[in-house]
Image (tube, rainbow, N blue to C red; front, side, top):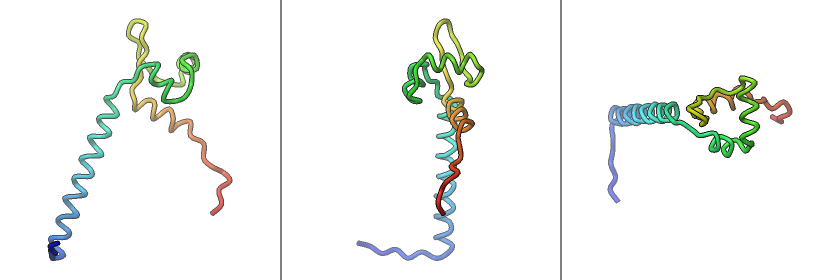
Length: 95
């Protein structure tokens, strides 16, 4: 095993590069999520609901979607937003 000694400046430079890399990865992940398209059946499976429930949510304007012919599609970022907007805060947590 080799031991490498770094100066404080070298250490900070490595930390900066790691942070920059982390930011780029997060940005790419966000873009990949934004561009991901899900089918009606896949969303039903992911949310553990029926396709009829999705139909009801679409009819009520609760969830964004696209329709091509008879096929229904959702953007993954819209599903994530739907989940976040329907989040209920815990009110009985012990500190």
